[in-house]
Structures are given as structure tokens and as C-alpha cells.
Length: 337
Image (tube, rainbow, N blue to C red; front, side, top):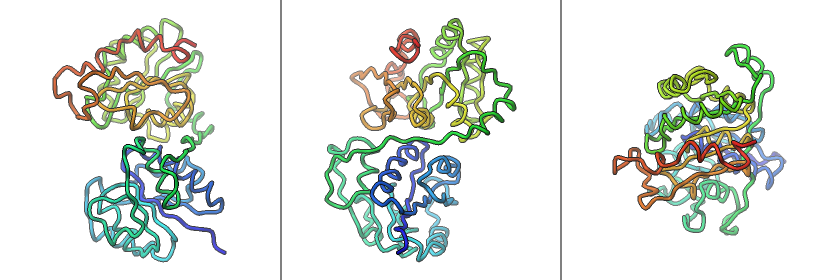
């Protein structure tokens, strides 16, 4: 018999895609010989390549929020006859179109956006019973009627040692001292970003302890990284915009620890199982915490938190500004090794 073939319609955010690895592992535990392909944004394919359970990443050539009915029909038709089941992680109606056009017999998803007909294995979602995003993902991979509090394996990403060596040479990195990674970006907005002057103060303290600081992020974070490096001085290297997502995986694996906002790279660091300090402000660690025993969350839980806004509606962002560099520096077991 042919192994069970499953198409996952993946999420559009880095952190969510990392957490989806728990679903892929769960499917393999249930069906050891199953084939898992993931239909996802093109940027995520190198990330999926670091997940051994995934056979192929299939690029969705549409931006976040685009309907692109014709493109989804063509993708669906190209996948026709290849899969036994589709698991649709996003909650939108458009995310269910390609599996429907592909004629996949079992199309599993949560109820939402009137997807009746497009989804024929519709599951109710009790957000109180499944508060974590990772729990919601994993539950979709279990048979209908399974216990509502599923256990989940933690995400783990593969590291490419040969690419690590290439990056060390290309970026002129020195490994003579332990490196601590800073991830000052947050794609969602400034209400999730720890103040840059706090990052700079922490960097100065770490350098004084004999460490180096590598600042990681996309080209959107270049200015923030430059500000931190300028304010912190010697021993701090701004790598924002100089690396790709897969490069960040290999560089983080070289680090002694990481300090990060609630961001996609926070989840990458957790999936590499390196000691991580995760700073939460407008978002909640009750929904998307870093999934690692070596990660510690700092969250003040102010009366106005979590607001889930892109910018602080009160104009002060105290939920993050009141987390001092000294508190992060003194995080037990992480920054004081």
C-alpha cells in the first residue's frame, strides 16, 4: 500500500511555521511512513527544509491577504490526485481553496469564514481548552474526537554545520568569545519591541563580561541594529539585513544565549534549544510562548496588557520599557552562566 500522503496549508508567519513543526512530528508519530508536503509562502521553504518530516515545500505565489482565485485554482489542479488529506492551518476561506480545487478527499480545518463545502472535516475550536497556538495546530492532526488537550513534541530545527563555517568566513565572525544573539525586530509592530536603548545597555554589560553580541534580523531591522551597535560600541556586530532566514538558524546555533522580542526569530531560537530570554509586551505568552525548557519569558502583565495592538494605544509602551536591562542581565541560568 502507498503511504498516507498529507498536504499541510501552512501559516504566513515565521513563528507559526516553526510551531507547525510540532504538528508534522505528531503526524509522523501516528503514521510513521506518511508523506508530508507543505503549501506555504516562498520565504518559508528554507525553513521547512530544516524539518526532516517535510518531504517538499510548495511555494504559494501569492502575498498575505491576496485572493488570487485563478492562481489558487491552478495550484490546486496541479496537486490533484496526490494526497489523501489536507490540513489547513490558517482560518481564512482562501486558504481552503487549493485543497478543494485539488479534490483532496479529506480536508481538515477549524470552523471559520463560512468554509462549509470547502472543508469537509470541520472541527470546532474551543480557545479556552486550547489556549496555545501549537496545541491548536497539533489537535488538527489528531482524529476527530481526540482529547482536547493534546500533548505536543517541541519544534526542533536542523543545523547545517558546513553553512555555519561558510557564514563565519563570509561575515568575518570571531568565535574567540561567547556570542549572545539580540533579535530587536518584531514584524507585527513597535508595541512588541523592547526599547533600543535597553538593548544597547544590555550589550555594553555583556561585552564587559567578556562576551560578543550579534544582532540578527531582516533588512527591516537594519536601522534598529545600527542604533544598538552605535550606542553599545565595541564588541557588538549588526548582522541585520546581511543574512537570510536559514543563515539566522545556523548563526543562532553558534550562540551561547539569545535575547529577543516576541517574534519569529524567538521561535527559531527556541527550536534550536539555546538559552533564550523572551520579552513580551503587547502580546501574551499564554498563546505563543517560546517552546523550549531553556527559554524564560519576562512579562510584566500590566493592567493594560495584553492589548495585541501594533502600537501602544496609551503612548508609553510601559509593558516593555519597564523591563530593565539589569533584570534581563540577571535572568537565572541564562545570562549568568
